[in-house]
Image (cartoon, rainbow, N blue to C red; front, side):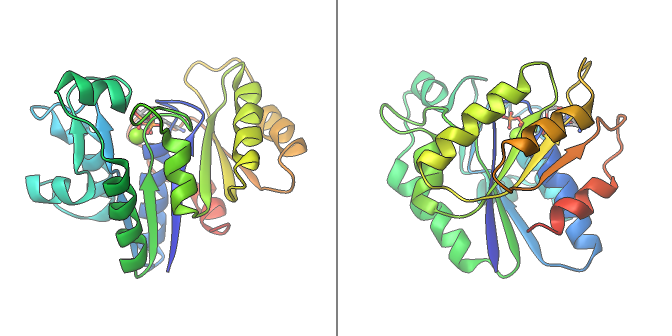
Length: 225
Ligand SMILES: Nc1ncnc2c1ncn2[C@@H]1O[C@H](COP(=O)(O)OP(=O)(O)OP(=O)(O)O)[C@@H](O)[C@H]1O
Ligand SMILES: [Mg+2]
């Protein structure tokens, strides 16, 4: 059993894309795998198919049903805002202790590889005092850090690495998921981040054309888990 927390330098960077690709690769290699996306904001119950939990469930080969979505993504909010604000819009809140207990139980119960996808970036607030960083620190499982390939991504990545090191979190791998209309060569971003990564492997994942979900990079990332 091993569990990984999938986090990123920001929202829309590629956490779900990378997680789904890894799930498909691992299942193809006959490995048991599971995934959770405990907190989803911007969840529109009339357009479920493109939601993060649906993408993950499809990759896992499971049904996109209300029950399955409840199982892997219990905290869902309508507004496409940070979880604390999205929850407040509905007069709700995220009980941090329950979130940690839910995640820990899943880690304990996992029989293969478990991915827990965070929400947004590493310091998105969950309530008035805690951020995703506190959630990751409470779980203390290795991270898969997904970063972008846009101009500015290197600085965002090094800032994130500094904060993660301060909290003594372990990073299993850094994945540079190439950004749309990026003006920077993916290989340059990968080598630059590698120079600052303290030995953590950095894998570049090119921008894949629409619909394509397979790439040799997933095997390289899986080898680091
Ligand atoms: N390497 C890539 N090739 C092609 N498309 C990608 C790639 N990386 C990300 N995408 C696409 O970019 C969009 C944002 O990625 P994704 O949903 O994985 O981000 P995220 O980090 O999970 O965001 P959130 O914070 O909302 O959970 C999605 O449409 C996804 O399919
Ligand atoms: Mg996502």
